[in-house]
Structures are given as C-alpha cells and as structure tokens.
Image (tube, rainbow, N blue to C red; front, top):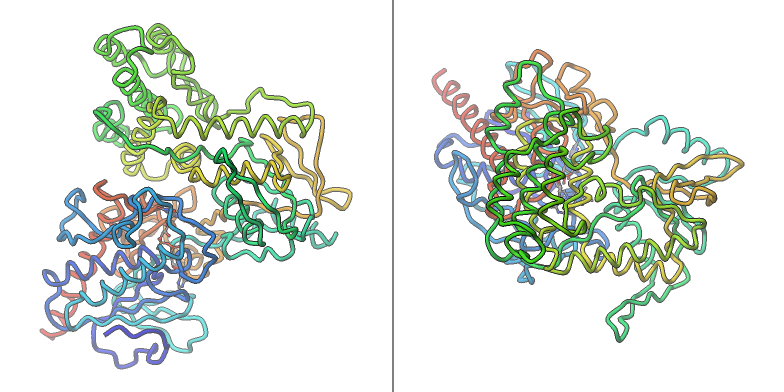
Length: 623
Ligand SMILES: Cc1cc2nc3c(=O)[nH]c(=O)nc-3n(C[C@H](O)[C@H](O)[C@H](O)COP(=O)(O)OP(=O)(O)OC[C@H]3O[C@@H](n4cnc5c(N)ncnc54)[C@H](O)[C@@H]3O)c2cc1C
C-alpha cells in the first residue's frame, strides 16, 4: 500500500512493525527504494516493514525534478543518457532489475534534451513502479513535510521530527537522501545583500533558478549576472522566452529573437568569461581509446596507499592530463592520420615513457588546468602533430580569454559571438572527434577519481565546463539574444563592487570600462556545507559529532553509506546517500551500461538496511 500524503500517525506510538525513514524522495531516495524492492525477496522475508518517505516535494522527482516547474527548462543530459535502472555493468551484490531509460520510456529521440517536467514524469513512474514491486508486507507512506531533526540513542530507535508535526516518526533506521541543499550566504553575499537593502537595489544570491523569484528584474532594466554555467542558461531562458519572447528560424537556419519588451537587459561575465563548451553533437564511431591507461585502479591504489597522502595538483593532475592526452592522440592518429607525422605505435611507445611533469616539478598554479605536461612530452607532441590546433592544450581550454583584451564592451560582443559560433561548429564537426575522445577520457577519469573521495571543487568545475555544457540549441539562442541586444558579454575575471548606490562590474577582458546596474544576479547553485546549509537537520547532525570533509560534505562509510562520526565510527542506524555526502559519483543521473557508482551505493545501503532490520525483527521474535 502506498499512502499518498497526509501526516496522521506520524507519532508512531505503539508501533511494533520495523520502520525505515528515508528523508528525501528525489532520485536518490527513489533509487534506494528500487534497491529495497529488488533485494527484499532475498534479505527480508517476513515480518513487515513500514517505509516512511519524508519530503515536502512529490516522491520520484522531488524538488529538482518536480513536474510543477516551467516547461521551458530542459535537462542537460540527452534522454538516452538517463536511466534509473541497473544493468550487468553495476558492481553490486543485489539483483539486476532492468527497465527503460528516459528516451525509451518517453519514446523520445535518444539525442533529445527532454524538459525537466518530462524527467519528473519519468521519475514519478519509476517511483510508482517501484512501490508496486515491493513484496507484500512492505508499506510505503509519503509525508509531505520537511524533516527538521533526527534524534535518538546510538543503539536504539531514532526519532525523525517533521516540521509542523508534534510527534516524531520512530525509525529503526534513517537514510538521509537530502540532495541539493540551500546555503546561508557567505560574507561577500551578505555584504552585497545588505548594500542592496540599504540602497534599494536588487540582489539575487546563488539559488536554484527554478525556485527564484525573478519578478524584481524589470523590463528594460540592466542586470549584472555573475556566472556563465548552467544556472545562467536557466536564468536566460526564464527571463526571455519565459517573458513571452520567441525565436524565429531564418532561411540560413540561424535564429532571430523577437523580444516581448518585458525582458531585462543582461550583462553576463564570469571567471572564464565564456559559456561552458557545447555538448558534442555527433556519435562515436570506430575503436575506443584504450582507457584507463595512465590513471586507472592501480594508480588510485598507489595514491591511496601513500603514507603522507596525496596532493591533487602535484600527484593526481599530471596523471589525469596524461590520460586525457592519450585519449586525444589515440583518436587523432586513428581517425586523422593525415594530420600526424609519425606512426601511432612509435608515438604511443614514446608517449608512455614521457614524464607527465617537468623534472623541475609542478604543472602550473593551483587554480586552473596548469601546463601541458613535461618538456619531453611537449617536444614529442610538437614533432608528431604539426598543427598546434590539433594538440591538446588543457590550460588554453580552461582559460580561453587569457591575454585577450578589448578596448570596449562593444568590440567584445563580436569577439565572443565568434568564439561561441566557433565552439558550436567545432563540437558538431566529427573532424574534431579527438574532442569526443577527451570527453570519454573525462568520464573514465571521473570514474577513477570517485575512489579518492574529497578532491576539492576545482576538478568538478573543470569537468562540467568541458564535459557537461549546454545543448547546442541553447548556445544558438544565446547568440540570437546577443544579436538582439538582450544579452551582453562582459568577459573574464569579473568582479563586482557595490559603491555610489549601484553595483559595478569590471573584467580583465575590457580593463578600461565598467558597467553599472541596480540589479545583480549570482547565477550559480548554492554551495552548502554541513556548517552553512540551511537544512537544520544536517547542521545539527554535524554539530552533534557527524564527520565532514574539508569541503563540507558529510562523511559516510564507503562500504554502505553509514554516517561516520569524527572518530571514524559508523553510526549503526543512520545512513546518507547523495551529493551532500563524500560518496563520489552522486552528482548526476547514471548513463546506461556505465557501472554507475550511485547504483552500487544504493544497493549496498539497501542491503545493509534490510539485513539490519531482518536481524532486528528476528531478535524481537526470539524475545
Ligand atoms: C538544477 C539542476 C539540474 C540538473 N540537471 C541534471 C541533468 O540534466 N542531468 C543529470 O544527470 N543531472 C542533473 N543534475 C544533477 C542530478 O539530477 C541531481 O544530482 C539529482 O537530482 C540528485 O538526486 P538527489 O535525490 O540526491 O537530490 P535532490 O534531487 O536534491 O533530491 C533531494 C530531495 O530531498 C528533499 N529534502 C532535502 N532536505 C530535506 C529535509 N530536511 N526534509 C525533507 N526532505 C528533504 C528535497 O526536497 C529533495 O526533493 C541537476 C541538478 C540540479 C540542481
């Protein structure tokens, strides 16, 4: 039985049935439930179980994927790359239960970027199918509330307090699948917000754009926007098509934007000053790069075994760079031998022997992709690949506007449109298929980095910028908005100051000019930590002794997701899954047949939970 909503009975007094409370009913909470359904026949025959799902948003999609959101917002994954179902590539103890990917379920073209509403409908269907697949005796009930606190003795039943409900839910086990959380403002944001209040300006801090109130951004008003990633794309869409603008397709296939007159005028800049690279618009053909080669399980084992630990920049990045280089050159030599000047076998043998860093040390600074390998490696590449445009230069990719200067914002607009047009053309042209090989390399590296735990935020930003940018049509819209004057580019190294009653933006790309506005939007997701999250439940858990990484992620036991305390001991009755934890590989939907670490984690947690509950009910029966 699946109870839909309602809070009655949350007190649980006199409850004798074993009880599991899952806080958070988004993709991870739903995925966990799917694994409970899959594993229960083997591990939990018998005495009934109440599963309480706590989430103010509908189970399945949860907050991020709720069906009730503007249809203009798209997913950033192709429909064929999204599945909620396991396959035989997942390294897990539980049984595989196959099911359709998003594109199979929704009967979409696999390359289509579905809107988030559609993904929400898929998630709801997955949830309903999962509940229906639970063995008799396991009952699910949704409580549409926020959980505000978890209490209870370490060895005894836990209490989960819900907002507005006087008595707690009693739980033999609690799983926290809290996902993406809101954050308190940091000191810079607090100062900007205070300035805005004092001077009657508009300041929108980092937020989930679908949840932001954008009504304060008036028609025709200049708005400074800091951030050029996916949150910007959402903002751009809501403030243009979302306000009645529309696109017309020209005879040459280009887009023209027809404004509604209700749009503000956007001025966007960021650290890099450019949007994320376009999604690649063609499929892989031919032999895949032989990965992993320089950064595989052996290298990760070696890093983990180092007595003094490892440093990402010094010890990991050179291996990553060499791995991505291998992917790139393997493809270049295989698909475009005419653009190379030596046989692949010679190149490969010499590449293998090259040191990944100069003898003098490091690969660059602490912020950015650093250099391009050691001197020997650079010399080899120069000899083997005549055209510099065919060489992989991660530092240049990471900082495309380094050294670019414009006398005025006017001249920058043409320059940036040309950059975006170039990126779109390149990412849709198989003549540049080494780019797709690097993408495969990034996925391989990501899979290995999962085991290293907390490696700091830089890598994730770099990965998103190269491998998880907007769909091509979004960049075409960006160009049309730029031509229509609704969107203006500011460049790289953007800083914002608040002075003279306005916000003022400057960039290193146009050093002699600045732009002023009465509105500022920080177009990026909040960056919560266990200390700065607005989620009181998590903050309190941390205050009471749960361990966290330096990055502010909740530390969990990699074996089964049990929450660790600061002595490293796992809590017997509390688990956590998802992006607020240090279990890596939690940040996106799983692509089919990629061994998804999130599936492995869900399975391990489900099995540990079911085994614990089974033993508990056996003990209760024996007593
Ligand atoms: C805007 C956005 C777009 C994304 N787009 C893509 C994409 O296109 N492709 C892709 O692969 N990945 C994408 N991702 C990443 C991926 O979808 C998310 O990682 C996924 O949503 C994670 O699922 P989750 O269940 O861990 O977290 P969430 O989706 O955040 O779900 C967590 C749930 O927990 C609930 N919750 C939190 N705290 C409490 C509490 N105290 N009490 C009760 N309930 C609580 C929330 O209401 C929420 O419903 C995107 C992420 C974001 C933020």
